[in-house]
Length: 226
Image (cartoon, rainbow, N blue to C red; front, side):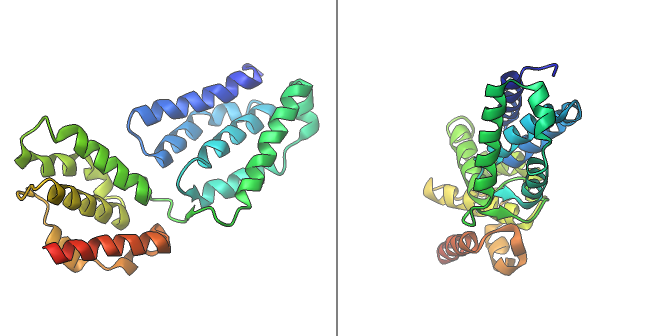
């Protein structure tokens, strides 16, 4: 290995955190980290196992687990060449790796884990809601109130165009924040039109049933106000 075992683990985690610091979503940060280490995965069985374990541990910290990522990790981690790995790592490192591997596989078997079935999704529901709130709070005191709505929509323009669930979550969260702050000039935000045409069933598997219920309630509350 060009890296030591623990150096490689740390490098994967650090790379992921760097992408998070650049304001990428959990899903995008993990996808970019995976891409960055694709070449290293082919350097040997130990490298492949170490990187996949690290990526899987990160994925388990997310509010949802990508079905595709779960299937790939399970396939790789259940078919490791342990004899080859023992030739590359110390006994202590092998034991640590296998302990991490076994933990990941046990967690993957947990049926309570929320799964993401839509590979297009960049942000998950609660993560998206939180991100809009954080950005809103960061700008509310530094720009004119009449510009807040357009500023938020510009920040999340790409995400609004990505999936229906991301689009409506952004719009609903923004509308709630504007109402709470008593801001009546919504700029380009035509939330009444968005709510009237929205059908929760159209999001399909982009949201879980509990997320659909929560979003529907939020929408109903806004409709009463508008």
